[in-house]
Amino acid sequence: MTTPRDQLDLECEIVYLRALIAIAARDRNEDDAQRLRQQLATAGALHDGWERTGAVRTTPMARLVERYALTPLETELVWAIIATSADPRLAIPLEALWGAGSRRGISVAAFTHLRGVPSDAGRDLALWLAQRSALVAGGLIVATDTSA
Image (cartoon, rainbow, N blue to C red; front, side, top):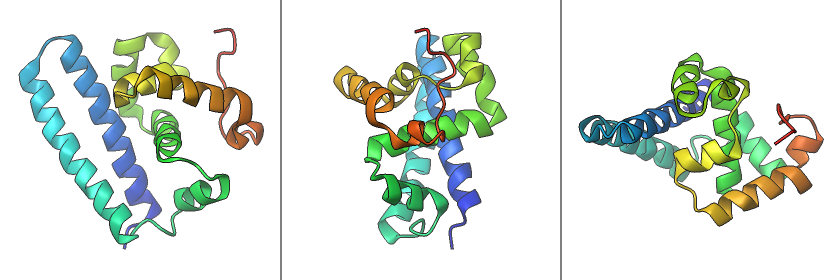
């Protein structure tokens, strides 16, 4: 049985690995990037297996996804937001990539970069958050800097 904590740990690991891959790519360290991509593929396979078998069907995130009709990409963004708040390992790599402002959370731009999301999908995510997200309206996601 997959517990909510197991799911949180895996999602945090996925975001952490993506951040480390971005640093390795920035530093042109292909050996590290390749090793990290293999670890990410393993974590991704576990994630996909849990989804496929329904192992996470009763977790709090599954209920949130159903209640707010989140798309897979919106769900990934929410997990990234949670991970940056819950996993202290992410502070240093995110700050190395995007500066001290990343200590207050992950931006849509940072998420789309880590995830490799096309720019139009990134804009759609930003508009979803700004215009119609019930998660923002309900206070579950809070903008930390509205001046940008």
